[in-house]
Image (cartoon, rainbow, N blue to C red; front, side, top):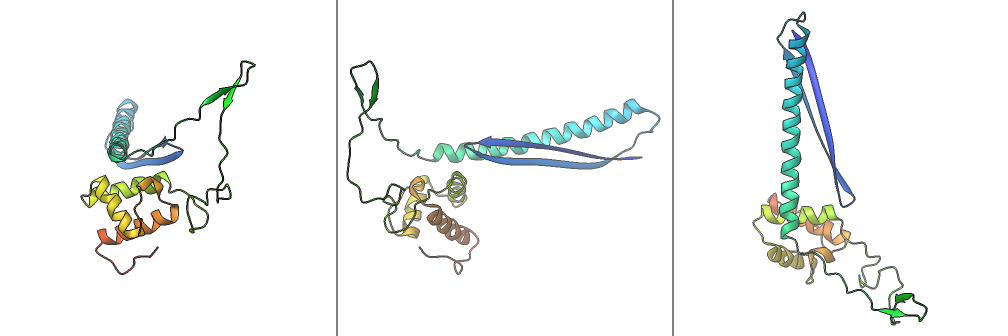
Length: 184
C-alpha cells in the first residue's frame, strides 16, 4: 500500500486584488508497487479529483463575485473635459479654474472626517455579500448603510473607516449580536 499526498493551488486576480485557492488530498493507493503503470494511473486519478475540486471552488467564487458586481451600481464617472486647440495642431484639456476649500488631497470630499480614503473593492464586495445573505436588494442595503453612518450615501462613496463600521454592524446583525457595534 502506498500513501499519496496531492496538492494544487491557483490564484485568481481581479481589479488589483487576488484570491488564492488550494486543495490537498491524501489517500492510499491499493495497487502493488511492482506495477508502476497502475500506481501512476491511480495517482493521476487523485490529481484529476483535486483539479476538479479546485475548479469548482474557483467557479463558485467567480459566480458569487459576478452576482455581487452585477447587482452593484457602478460609480458615475465625470464627463471628460472638452479639448481646446492651441493653433499648432495640438490639443489640450480645457480645465477651468475653480476655488476650493479643499487642500488637494481629497479632504474636501470627506468634510470633517479627516483624510478621505475610499472603501476597498473587497469591503464593497463583502457589503454586497452580507446584504444578499440578509435578503436585501442593493437599494435596501444602501438605505441600511445610510442609517448606520447617519447620512444618505452610496456604497461606492463610503470611506474605509465607514465601510468597516458598516461591516461590523451588519456582521453583528447577522450573528444576532448587537452589543458589539461601533458608532460613527
